[in-house]
Length: 292
Ligand code: FES
Image (cartoon, rainbow, N blue to C red):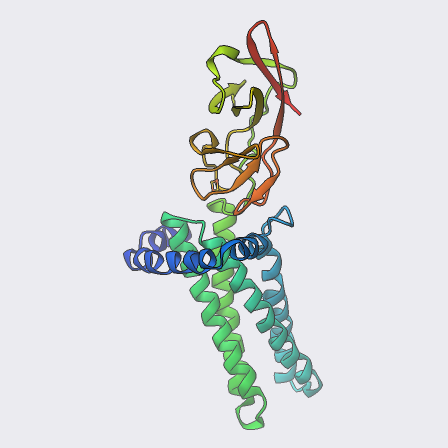
C-alpha cells in the first residue's frame, strides 16, 4: 500500500473517529472545568506564549534521547559494557520528554477534526505504545538476567516511535497542522488599495474583502476601522464569520482563537501565530488597506 493511501486509510477509520468523538470533548471539558486557569494552562501548552506550537519542539527530547539509547545499546551488545549506564539514562530522559510531548500533543489535538483528528489519534497511540515499551525496558534493564530483553523492547519501541513520528511529520507537512495559515503564497499589494465603500461597513460588523488576491478582515468598532488577515493563522478559519468581542477583539468561528483587532496578537489560543495587521485609511468614501 502506498504511504499516502495508508495515511488516507487511517484518516477514514470509523473506530478512530468514534474514539475521537469520545475523548476530545472529555479533554476539552477537563480544561473548561478549571475555568480561567484551565484556559491559561491550555494556551501555555499550545505554545501561545512562544509564538510557535510547543509540541514539536518537545518531541525532539524523546526522539533524540531514544536515538542515543539505540546507539549506546548497540555498542553494549557489541561488547562495550561501559555504555550501559548512558543508555539507561537516555531511556529515562526520553520518558520524561515523552510525558511533555503527550500533554502538549493532546492539547493541540483538541483543536483538530475529521481526518486530521484520526491521524493525530493514531500518532498519539503509537507514541503511547512506544513509551510503554520504553518504560517496561527501563524496569527490566535493572536486572542482568533481563537486560537483553530490555534492550530488545527498546529497539521495538524505537520502531514504533519512528512510525508515530512519521505520522507526526505528515500532520505538519501534509495536513498543515501547526503551520501559520496566514503565510500564503499570495502577496497583498504593497501600497494602499481600495477594498470597500466606507458606507458598506456598519459599526459593530465585520466583512471579508480582497486586497488583490488576499482576503482581508475589515471590522468596525466604535466608529474605528481595523483590518487583519482574514484567514485564521491556526487552521485557516474565516474570521469574518466569527464574533466581534468587546475589548477590540475577534474570535475565530472554528476553534475559538481570539486576536486583537489593534495589532493582530493572539489573546487566546489554540492559535500561536498572530494575524498580520493592515493599515487602514479612507479616501473618497472608500476604505483602503495596505500591509502594516
Ligand atoms: S482555525 Fe482554529 S482557531 Fe481559527
